[in-house]
Structure formats: C-alpha cells, structure tokens
Amino acid sequence: MKTAIVWFRRDLRVDDNPALAAALENFERIVPLYIQSPHANDDWEEGSASRWWLHHSLEELDKSLRNLGSRLIIQRGESLGSLMEILKITGAEAVFWNRRYTPGEVRLDTAIKADLKTRGVAVHTYNSSLLKEPWEHLKPNGGPYRVFTPFWKAYLASGFSVSPEDPPCRMAPPPESLVGDRLGSLNLLPKIPWDQGLREAWVPGEVSAQRQLRRFLEGPASAYAEARDYPGTRGTSRLSPHLHFGEISPRRIAAEIMRYCRPGDHGVDVFIKEVGWREFAYHLLYHFPHTDQNPLDERFLGFPWPTYDGEAYASWTRGLTGYPIVDAGMRELWHTGWMHNRVRMIAASFLTKNLLIHWSKGAEWFWDTLVDADLAANTLGWQWTAGCGADAAPYFRIFNPVLQGERFDASGEYVRRWIPELKQVPNAWIHHPFDLTAQELEAYGVVLGHDYPAPIVELKGTRERALAAFAAIKSGPDSN
Ligand code: FAD
Image (cartoon, rainbow, N blue to C red; front, side):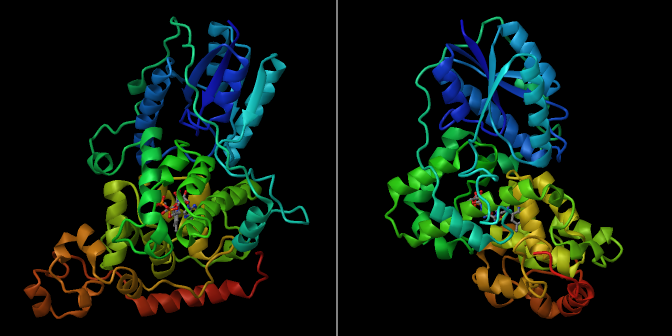
C-alpha cells in the first residue's frame, strides 16, 4: 500500500491541515506521527503549562484521528532517528509536514529535510499556521518590516487566502503492528498536581478551539474593539493557546469571520488586526532570529540594568507586589495559565520599568507559566513593553498600575476575583489600598503587610529611576 508519514508538530488538528490533505490526496495509507524529542529544536524547551496543554492536545488529536478511522502514533526520541525508524517499519515513501518558523525549528527542519532527501525520501512541506509566511511579505525594498502599521496595511492590501480545507471524511489506519509509545510515557503532566486551575479554565483540542471561536463570534466579537481592554469581562477570544498549538488555523478563523460577520464590523476588524500582531511577531522572529535573547533595538545592549533583585522578582512572580492590578494578573497567570493582554502589559511594565528587572527574566516566567507560551509573541510582547523591540512603546511610557487599574477595572471586579483579601475594599481604593489608614483598612478586613503586602516599591521614584536609565541610552541612534 502506498504509504506516507504526516509528521504533526504545531498543527494538532485534522481540519485545514494542508500537509494531511496533500498526503491523503497522493497516498493510500497515512501514518500520523508525533515525535517527542529531547531536542525538538534549539529554542526554548516547552514550559510546564505548555507541557500540560500538549498532553491533552495530543489526546484530542488522537480522538479526531480515531473518528476518521485512524490513530496517532507517538514516538519518543530524536526527530530524524524516529522518522527513519517509522519509514523503515512502514515502508513509507514520503514525509509530509507543516512548516515551523522559530530559529531553532527552522534549523532543525532544514537539516532533517536535507538528510531525508539524501536518503531518497520525498519531503513535502506546507504552511498551516500563518496567513502568510514571513518571507512572502517584505517591504518594497525587499527588507523585513519593523513597524506594525505599514506591515499590516500592506498585508491587507496584498490579500491572503481565506479558503481553509475541510477535514478528511475517512482515513486508512496505520499498520496494526505499529504501536508507538504511550502518551503517558512522555511525562508531560505534572508529578505534583498543581494543574487544577488549568483544568477548570481550559479544554485543549481542536473541537474546543472551534467551539471557542464560534462562541466568540456569536457573542463578544462585535464589542471586541472596546471590551478587549477590560480584564474583568470576557471580551477577548481566548484562542491563543489553541492557535499556538495549531488546533485551529488563522485561515479557518478568517473564513469563519466572513461567515458570521458583516463587512465593516468594527469589532471584527480590530480582532483580525490582533491576529495580524501574531503574524507580525512571527515575521520579526524569523527575520531577526537573535531577538528571543537580545534586543532588536541595539542601543538596549548598553542599558544600565541594576543588580538583579531576586526578592522583588519573587514577589512579582507570586502576585505579592502590593499593586493590586499587577498581583491580580500574576495570580490569574499562576492559576489559569493565561493573563489578559492589558494586564500582561501592566505587569511587564512594572517588572521592567518600576523594578528595572531585565525583560528576559519576565519572558522566562511567562514562558513557564503560560499555556499560550509562544516564542514569537512572547518575545514581541516583552520587547515591546520594555521599549527595546520593533514598534516598541516609547521609553517614557511607563504604565502606572494604579491609573491603569482605575481605568480598565473601575469596578474592581478583576482585582477582587484574584485577590479575595481585598474584597471589602471600596472601588475608590481597590487599586491603591495602601493610601488608606490602618484603621480604615481594618474596617475592610485588611492589615497591610499581613493580609496583603504593602507596595514593594513606590511608583514616582522608580519611574524617575527608569527614565534616567533610558536617558543614558536614548541618545544613541535608533535602530528601529
Ligand atoms: P485576542 O485578543 O482574542 O486576540 C486574538 C489572537 O490574536 C490571540 O489569540 C493571539 O494569537 C493574537 N494576538 C493578540 N494580541 C497579540 C499580540 N500583542 N501579539 C501577538 N499576538 C497577538 N501571546 C501569545 O499567544 N503567547 C505569548 O507567549 C504571549 N506573551 C505575551 C507577553 C507580553 C509581555 C505581552 C504584553 C503580550 C503577550 N502575548 C502573547 C500577546 C497577547 O497578550 C495574547 O496573545 C492575548 O492576550 C491572548 O488572548 P486572546 O486569545 O483572548 O486574544
């Protein structure tokens, strides 16, 4: 039987999966394969929350494949060695996969492709996770974009496909003798069961991703333009982990938007623009592969970061800074593996500007705790907030967590959800309880420093310290 391998990676779905569709068109039997390699790439290894998601996502992919008559084969081991082994056992003639874009993934995939070809194995690769690939969209002078607005304007003007491929109806199963490793043997789930919050907040997998998209388009999408900034409401799609693991494609999202919404619907325009930020993030990391470690704006190589303050960092990670909106965000992250975008910006600004802790320390924490941890989007988000990335926030934009809280969580709903110890504090003080007297606080059931911390730093002085540090480097030429 003419057999091919479809190597699943960041495309854990059967819907709109071009590699799977192409393989099915040309081969009678498909071996759906996932390889858990100790060196899947030379990028950052999956964090704890991502590993939790991956376990469940693989389980769901197996279910999708079984519904079609097939099943997922899981292999532990080096990618090339595992591919060679399965090729040998099954007599497969070709390998199909969807392309990946982070620097380590590109290096690895390029080497594997070359190796397989020299061994006479045909390799066919496709785009499944971006509206356009990073090399397809360049400035008129042939260089990569560094500023979002012209990037996105040209993206929209040149157009992209909104014709996803439907999932297959049936698939012939892989040979019965092919067993593979058990999902549990990948040890993706935590040994100490800290994942209850994740289980309450999420259902990984492509069925859930499509349900989540429909729920969003039928509900919050039309008000997205305004509601997306308010962390107390469910105003955003929460599709980020599904997109990261490829449980849904941006093409499917764009097609569903066209089906559900009227053209010119402002909420939807803003939403698709946010998906555009994801495309921009991949564009940047692809063209500037050093930026997961180093600033895009090279002036920042000389930024006078003070000696690392481990105690302040620990308070930030635990949601114990004394600034309620920052702490609520950090606790939401710890509990659910996700944080609202507005609060990500506030928490990241607090770390990099008020605490003057290097953005990479924040990126590392997010990497381990986010279920949507994504090297491209995380790098963009941290460098943007720190002021050292493409199209970055200007250096003088230092989010004031009290004013941000009052503006975007005026009713204190978000803060009270994550910091129950402040539940009784009235709205007027919920974002700065430290301005109340000890007696007033006591009336609301709070002893500062006991029930909830006093601020670990004050805002005015730390803001001035940050501005002085920025002044030290801003005289250099801007590389943006
Ligand atoms: P929606 O508002 O519904 O947006 C739809 C989709 O667009 C998202 O699912 C996401 O894929 C994409 N998107 C939206 N905003 C951005 C953005 N600013 N940059 C890139 N893509 C975007 N996003 C990640 O997916 N992974 C990360 O690791 C990540 N780290 C971040 C770190 C910092 C410091 C900051 C400020 C932002 C980070 N973001 C990251 C971007 C953003 O916060 C999340 O994509 C968003 O909160 C996800 O929620 P949602 O799916 O409801 O988004």
